Image 1: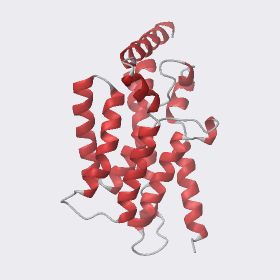
Image 2: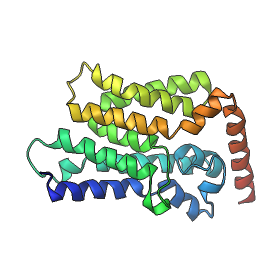
Image 3: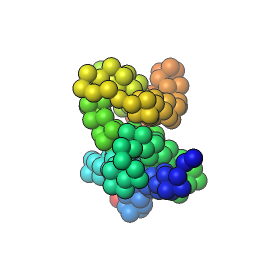
Length: 216
C-alpha cells in the first residue's frame, strides 16, 4: 500500500513544478507570455520576448524546481534506499505540474528545462548527453524545438546504455515518460516542421519580442 506521505510529497512535487516561472517573470514586466511570441511560458519564448536575462532566469527557475522535486527523497527520506524509486516519481510529477499547471488552467510549458533539472539529479550523465544532443541538433537545424525533441528522445537511450552505472526500472521508466511528455508537448512544432512552417513561426515570435522590448 502506498504511504500517505508518498502521495503528499508527490502532490507537493506537482505543485512545485506547476509554479509558472516564466509567466511570473513576464507579469512582473507587464507581459503575459501566453499572448506574445510563441505563446509558451518557457525559457525560449521568455528570451525572445523579454530578453536574454529573463530567458536565463526562467531557465534557472524551471530547472531548479525540477531538481528540487527530484531531490525530495534525499531531503525528506521516508525509508532507507527509496531514492532510486521515489525521486523519479517526484520528478515526473514536477514535469507534469509544469506542463499542466493548475495555476494556468492546466496549461503550461513544454517541460524541457524542468526535465533537465530533474535528470541532473537522477542521471547527470544522461542529462549531459541530452544537452550535447540538444546543442548539436539546434546548431544543425537552427530550431530550439528540434534540439528539445532530439534531447528528449536521447535521454532514456543514454540511461539504458549507460556505462557509468546501472539505472533502476523506475529511473529508466521516468526517462521514457519524461521524453514522451516533452515530445507530445512539441506536437505543434512537429506539425510545423513537417509543413516547413517552423521558420516562419520562429521569425514571427522573434519580431513580437523585438516589438515588445521596444514598447517597454
